[in-house]
Image 1 (cartoon, one colour):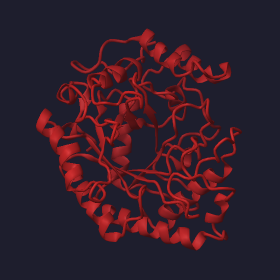
Image 2 (spheres, rainbow, N blue to C red):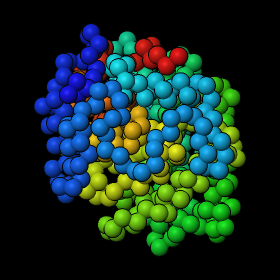
Image 3 (cartoon, rainbow, N blue to C red):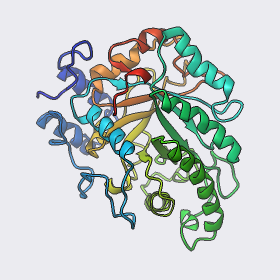
Image 4 (cartoon, rainbow, N blue to C red):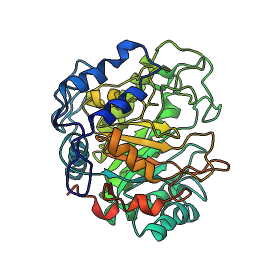
Length: 396
């Protein structure tokens, strides 16, 4: 079992820890039906020697080998830089590139990643550690719809981070088209209303155009974007998820909407700088992942909030054969008082989840301190030899 884990560069990872890997897989599946253990069993039975061989297939369609994808209705060709970033992330998951990229969400305080938010989450972390975060993440919407000026202000921060050697990640948590608020289930509404021919298509298209203009601004600046729209769709807190209490899997509407979004941004808007990040909640015990298909996804990065930093769904994510990350990483909600040891992040990733290419720590809010700078030993984490920070990212 030579590939578990495969990070063995000097000063980076410990020697193979098969027991720890198995323990991490077990922890993520203890509450699941036994048939869901299949991907983990196949992983441990066949090994992962730096390739996708032995990973249980999550779908029948093969993983695309290159940047040209016609499933959206046009020939998709990633920009050269986007293709290089995707290859780099792929090597962090499936190859021998050592380390895991650090990331931090910058919240909507004084705008999207306003000066005070950036100063605290990024600047104070640098002051404490001497290191700049590797991936800077923002959300283009979530609390409210920002105008072009607000989106451009956020872009300026991302462009600066990119030009200094970092990576940029953008989520889009669109405000409810039915007018019920961002975190309100759509009561009986049909996502098909947002598709071509639907009653809300004109409204939806105007939202897409506003966001596309912001993403095009990043494209013109040469920025490759880890693009994560409409995340945690297998939970129950967002309007694009299933209505609360409906436990049966009914994700056809979401998959159709994702594919239409992909087609619109790729074919109509020509946004070749986007790496599409599929980001479910990790636990399929709640609901299976509504995977749009390999042609429509570049990276799989779930979310995790847990004091033990358990990445539920780790084996499921690997089964898609894509680069794997953690798009939101936070402590459990019970005691998020700033007393957690950040060093446990790299320890957990190193020992139990060695194929994860990056993680993004979430921001803090009143009563819940999730960010790196708001918890203990941030400097030690950022200076761990297994952590890749802004000055060490090597995609080109």
